[in-house]
Length: 211
View 1 (spheres, one colour):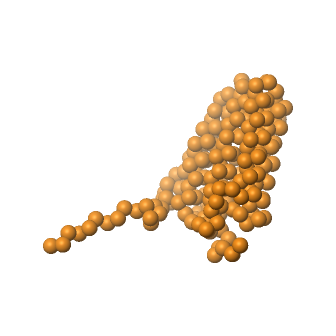
View 2 (tube, one colour):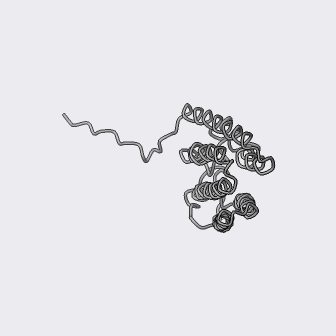
View 3 (cartoon, one colour):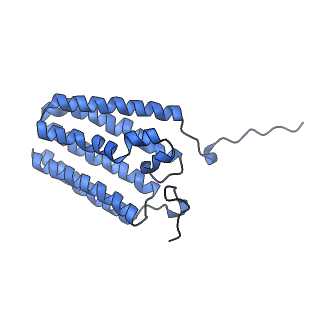
């Protein structure tokens, strides 16, 4: 495979749907989805937690494989984001079904993760980078507070772990609201930065009539 001009830059020639990483994404998505559905149907929290664990482990595995095998693609990054939200929603909705007191914090968290964070994550497509993991090439501050390892751990893990360990809905609500506020601040930073329009999509200048 020819080397890419820059490790963080997208390579149009490398874009494809199926790679080893996207296969891992597909397997972990189906497995987690099935476990969480069965857990919600049987009112069984243990199965929901196992499904969440499959999602987390699989999400780390597909990213690690993509970097190891140098098969990161923008297509794979978008598929990964969509599957993350499917697995996340399935777990949290099942969790709220099993534990109705958690409905409000779960609702706020899903608003943050599935709407605001999704928009932020898809913004990388406006630049020629391979995924949000390389957004530091665009804006260091937005990257540090959204896609650095500590930021991703807080956004994807802290909320679930504290809800499961403490069972305190008010703590979950406080964390979910805090995450929503900060994601809105990050969205403000992004909009101030501006989303570039690809050259190919820019409207052509009107022809000047000869006179």
